[in-house]
Image (tube, rainbow, N blue to C red; front, side, top):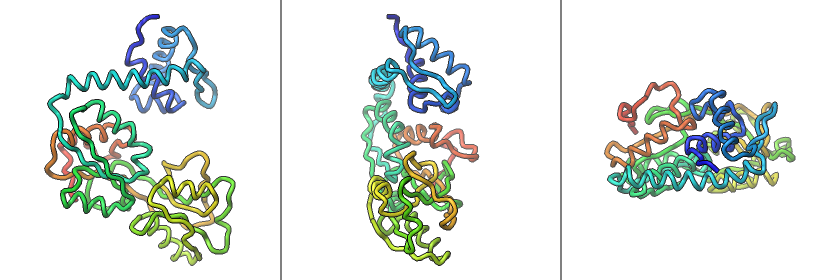
Length: 298
């Protein structure tokens, strides 16, 4: 078998993760035709079909699933080798604060890229559901960089993405029709909890706190079990959850905001760069092409 080029494997991995050629092309900043061409070339090299293309996207074949497992290991090792030679002089502690709704989903591949690219850096991540607490830690010098969720339009930091909050329930549970609405919420200090209570109070809808958790996993588990309804950002809704569209009051929009201490080391700046360049956290309409041009104030 001939060698498998790294760039083809990277394209394949994005398509394998999204199962959508259009979305993969968008993330890769390539034309869909270029992505298809690279996939065809990779299939020629492995002498097997990797994907079945259909009207509603793509599906991995058995060979495709096998390659996905091996390709990820190879890419990780490749990036670690390259990073160890290119970035040996970039080290130090990087203290990141974030909500676990980011750490457990969109942020995970970004952090993986960072630790593989900068093996001498020491990443310390702190998750908390209270944005005000994370900002306070940043101001007190206990964090270097923070990814927080704030009400849309709040001043300070660099807005990466605007989203709307939505009410959710388990697909097979209609708990939102109960006379007293059961809520699944984070503990006090979470803006989702505050917005939910404020919206229900304003609408005159009676409610009770049925389940409290400190983690997104706990909140979603309770929703799936039919214990109550919760609110989360729209882009984080998973397939087995249903959005409640009409029966409950409208919720505010929020901004995913990046904040950074004025004095940080080069490793922290490199993590900032990776976040800003990611398609998931790409700044919306702020015109920032170089993080150094963005003065992050808090």
